[in-house]
Length: 145
View: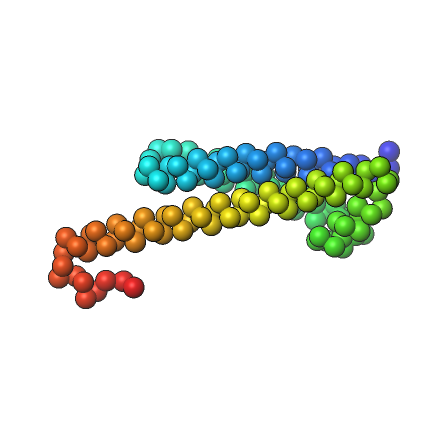
């Protein structure tokens, strides 16, 4: 098998691994949301570390994908990937295109979950700040807006 074939094979294998990582990430983001709602610091510390590990793995695969595309002489990014997919044997093209579409969907879903968790944390923080200010009415003038 040629070096280019090995690179493409590695790229596809990493995409399959990323699909699995995004599934795990989505589950961990749901656990994070539950931890935020319950204000369970122990769970949040554990889940946040797992999320960081998953982000690091996804980032490493992304960097590897960039290196492989450069080594193959293909433009880095979605345009380059689509160009590469079009060069695959026809029987593989649809499967790999669907895999990439799944990755894009999973990434978008995880981003929305992460954003929602961030908003939830901000709302909790605002509520706590207001509660703290209620107990010290003299501080109303200095309340952050």
